[in-house]
Image (tube, rainbow, N blue to C red; front, top):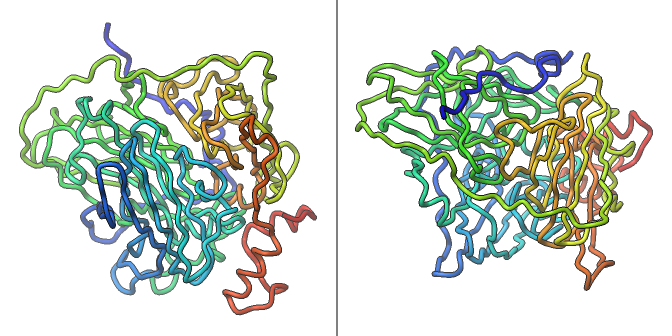
Length: 512
C-alpha cells in the first residue's frame, strides 16, 4: 500500500507566529551567498573502548557574518554555536565544563537522559567565569539529534541569542544498521535554524530587540551562516534540523514541493518513516529528514524555504545514482503501561507577554511543583489556555525524559509524533496527552521553549525520586545568589542589575 505524502503543516494556522502583534517577518538577505558552515566535530581529549573525555568551553569571540565588521558572538569551543559532540550509546562520558565567558552560565544537555539537576545543567548548575566543573554520565538512550544550550534563569534567552547553542549526536548500533546517510558534513548535515537582527556595525543588541513574547530578527541565520548554499554531491542527504530560535516557528518546504521523508524526531528514530512536502517546527523541536535529489539534474538548485523566504540553497552537482528504499518499519519504540492507580497529571500553560505562567504560578527556583517516582509511568495532560483568536502555539519541553505523545484533544497525534519527543507544540485551546516516565532521579524543569517565556516564568520543576530516597534534598540556586554573582561580574551594584526575564515578574508584582 502506498503511504501518504502529507502536504500541510498540521498546527492551527490562526495561531502561527505570523499573527503575533510583534511578528518580525523574515527577509531574504541581500548579501552574497556563502557556503553553509558545518560545525566541526569536537575532538575528544581522550577516548578508550569504554570512556570518552571532552572539554566543552563556553567562550566569547567575533564571527564574520556579514561584510564589514565582525559580530561579537558566543559559542562552545568556537566563536558561534558549537562544535558538534558525539556520544556513543553505552559509553561513559567525562566532560569538563569550562566557562571562559565574562558571566556565569550553565550547560544544559537538551534531550539527554541524565540525572538532575546538576548533570542536566539547568539553572541549578552554574559555572562561574574562569571556573571548570566536571560531570560524568553513561549514555543509555537511542541514537538521536540533541543539543546543548545555556540555561541560566532568567537570562537563558539572552545567552542563547549570543550564540550558545550546539549540536549533540547520540549514536547506537540499531541506527547504524538503517539505510540512512551518515557521512557527517557530506550527506549528513546539521541545520541550526535561527534568526537575528543586525544593528550598527553588524552587532546584535538583545535589549533593543527584547520582546517578552520572544525575540525575533528579520535575517535567517543557518548554522551561523547568512544566505547559505550547500554543494550536494550525493543523491540523498540527511538533514538534522533544529529549531534553535528564541521564538520563531519554521514552516519548511523545498522548491517545486520536492517531497522528503522524516525518519527521526527529538528523541530518535521514529517507528515508521513519514513523507512530507511541508513541515513545521516549533522552538527546540528537531526533525531528521532524508531528501532524495534523484529527480533533480546536476547544475540545478533546490531551495529550502521557510514560508516564502529562501533559507538554504542546495546546489546539485554530479552524484552517483543509488536506489535505496527505506523500510516501512524502522525501529521498535517502547510503550510501557501506565502505572496502576496513578492520577492523570494536569499542566496548564497560560498567558502571553509578561503574564505567562504554568498552573497559575510563575517559576520559583527553590519550589518543587511536582514529584514522580523514578520508573513510574504517568499520563500528563498539557493544556494551552490561550484563545485561538490572538493566541499562540506554546512549545512544551521537559528535562530529564523523552515522552510519548498519546493524543491531541483526544484525537491521534500528528503523523510524525509517534516516536520519542522532549518538546511538543500545543495549540491554543488544546490539551496534549503525554506518557511520561523518568529513568534518573533529580530535579528537572518543564517549561515553554519560547525562551523569553521560560525566563518570564512559564516554567515549573518536578523531582523524580527513588523509593530509597523519596525526600532527597538538592542544593538549588536562589535568586539572591544569582543576582549578586551577575552584578559582581558586571561590576555594578545589585540594585542596578536588570535581567530581561525579570520584567515579567516585576510587571506582575511577583518575585522569582
